[in-house]
Length: 83
Image (cartoon, rainbow, N blue to C red; front, side):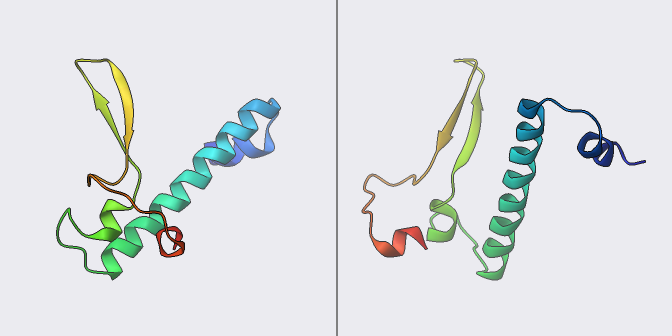
């Protein structure tokens, strides 16, 4: 059997099951974001479809992970922002 299937039908602690569910949810979201960026034909890093996405990066000097969103100096929250 597939190892991933075994994880779901095997005995997992509730914390492990929640972690796996979270990872799957994030990956489905990532797939949808990539599809959106492709369908909107985003060609540069200043496109809103790109800027509006949360991006993670590892900093070797700080030995830490950072999340970046909106690489612009000003963010205005409107109903459209949430779409």
